[in-house]
Amino acid sequence: MQEKLAKLGLDTNGVDGIYGKGTTNAVMILQRRTGLAVDGIAGKVTLAKIDQLIKEKGLIGTPGKFRVYTGVFSNHEKAEAAAKEIGFNAFEKDLRAWTGIFTSLEAAEEACAFISGKYGYNPKIRKE
Image 1: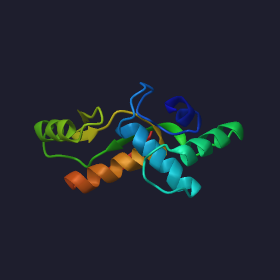
Image 2 (image 1 turned 90 degrees about the vertical axis):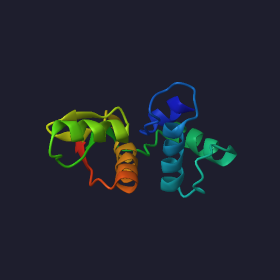
Image 3 (image 1 turned 30 degrees about the vertical axis):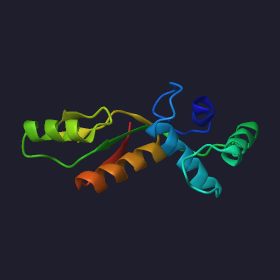
Image 4 (image 1 turned 180 degrees about the vertical axis):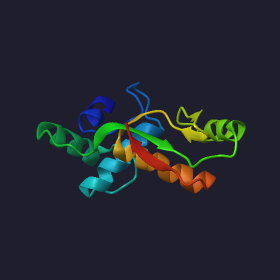
């Protein structure tokens, strides 16, 4: 299923056979964009929609390479601490915390919203 979601332009945070947070987020994005009930569960209706879209060569996500980054911190230590705190394979660069690469805009938007809501940072998205 992760491979099918990736073909639709959705980022599952890797194809590893584990129905984790990345897969749940990808399923929720698909459900939201196709008018299905948004619960993050790939039940019969969602799986049928995935197969239909694959057959039609539909694209749900916006593929590309995107990073989320925070505003500037006062020093490297604070930026490094923020990167460690937010996760998403984040690292410190130029006194900012930058995430690893997301392969769809929607996954980057979900991470951006999470980082903003949980940590109060004002993150932005950059296309790589």
